Image (cartoon, rainbow, N blue to C red; front, top):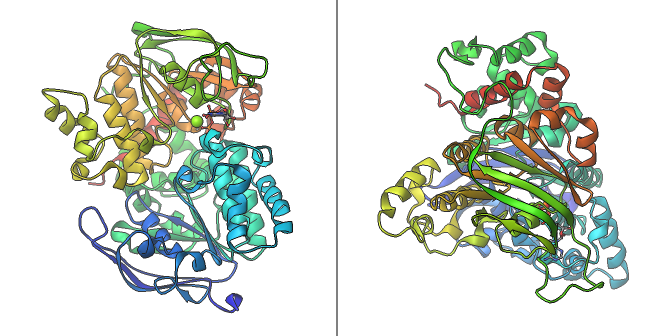
Amino acid sequence: MWSDFTPLDIEAVRFEAIHSSGDGLGPVDLRVEPGEHVLVIGPSGSGKSTLLQALSGIIPHAVPAQVSGSIRICGTDTQESDVPSISRMLSVVAQNPSSSVCLPDVADEVAFPLENHAWPPSTIGTAVEATLELVGAASLVGRRSATLSGGETQRVALAAALVSEPRVVILDEPTSMLDPEGIASVRLAVDTAAARASTIVLVEHRLDEYAGARGIGGLPARTVVIGRGGVIAHDGPTASVLLENAAALQEAGCWLPLEAELAALTGSAGGVENAAVAQAVAALGRGAVRLAGGRTAGCQPGDHDPQDHGADAREPGGPSLFARDLDIVAGGAPRRRRSAADPAPVLRDVSFGLRGGELVALLGRNGCGKSSLLRTLAGLARPGSGRVEGPRPGLVFQNPEHQFAQTTVRREIGHGLGAGAAARVDDLATRFDLVDHLEHSPFRLSGGQQRRLSLAAMLAHERPFLLADEPAFGLDRRSSIAAMRELERTAASGCGVLFSSHELRAVWAYANRVLVLGDGYLLADTTPFELLRDDALLESAGLERTGLLDWLVERRLPAGHARRILRELDDVATRVPA
Ligand SMILES: Nc1ncnc2c1ncn2[C@@H]1O[C@H](COP(=O)(O)OP(=O)(O)OP(=O)(O)O)[C@@H](O)[C@H]1O
Ligand SMILES: [Mg+2]
């Protein structure tokens, strides 16, 4: 019986020459006991997803790789078994949900694992509905998969992984595209699976949002850190792993929950509840402060923040892109005359202008119409009514691989640039940390690398306006800050940038204006600072302040001061150790 075996038992596993540099990954030894709940963190490219693919048998059965050592799931060796057999014991929510949702209808997608495992047909419908309900997606049961938004797809992928009540559940960044309600649903779904004695392995970046008000106590009890080269750098109780290694984890590029991030900064635990830590954080926005390990951070005399004049707004210039009375139809309006039978627009009466030099965030719940609005502005979808005026902007898609058309990273960045492209390609590859991948296929890059490539390829064209759909989702801390700074730099060069996001912290730190969508309308066109202080607006748009943002708002710091704190924390996180 499976329940007699250790759910997950990895011994001396090594992947030969799998890394793009030609190096191997591992060795890894890891044993996870029944009902254990493990958080796995590690910088981008450390091999987390590779290890997870080996657990499900995708490596080596579908993706060839030379693997040594043994991986046993509930006693079965994954290299000697096959993927269908392993899937009876283990389910995976893949990093990119759109690549795991494969059937045309949502109900069929979630029923698929049960049909494969020969569940009695009379039980399948009830199980599908109950699981969709559990992940906050009951309303999607009759939908076509191709029409789902990014966050909706992520919920359906989670439901399909949980529906068969597997003994081992592997979740690879299940909240990367979710709004706060979606994250709460994932937490509930994971807790429910854990209560059924499933063993859960969670790879997650958005630790503050996932943990909620309980902070580190809201995370899985055990944490495993995969370090460079794919070896286990730390393994133990979550609080001690994160707090004792905070500075090293931050330097490696990992996201940390707030308490650990501030421990990396000050050397003290307790987060903003600890008066000394709170004082050090508040001082960050005022001048240089001494940090743990004798380092310093904060504004140095003569430092100049191009965005920050003590408030969110600044004087933009250049040409304008206008949305005039737009009705946004999901999937684009048909060319024929509209009929009463057509579905209602997802957004109505949307009007705003975007000027050169602005960095504007587009916010709202999953499915509120952010991607649909961006596609309409880019001329890829027809509006139901109204018009877009101005030069055609470039668009970076929510799923980067949907826009790759070339065989190498070098060609993808240089596509359509003509003479003189080489220097520009090299510059962008350096800025987006893609130099080592220039001759690789865009389709063989990691999720984070694909995201950086899609931004680099679009910026290469130097259009007057850039639209970016969730440009930083799924990136490690260092890459996500780098992506936001590239957008800021693009705006500073005169381009008007509009990006959608679920990351309020990054929005507050970098955007100078926000457009807030909700209830089918543009609810507000304001500054990040005003939005963060407006509880009613946050609630109607389904947005939530997490720990640090709450603290900054409660302290009633001036806009510029609060933003400087956020930016300084990003500076500390991205500083390369001496
Ligand atoms: N081709 C389509 N046909 C029908 N409905 C669609 C289509 N594309 C999207 N939709 C629906 O339109 C609504 C808006 O989708 P959109 O992708 O714009 O949301 P979003 O705000 O970008 O969400 P997310 O934060 O999850 O990415 C959603 O309910 C979505 O399911
Ligand atoms: Mg979207």
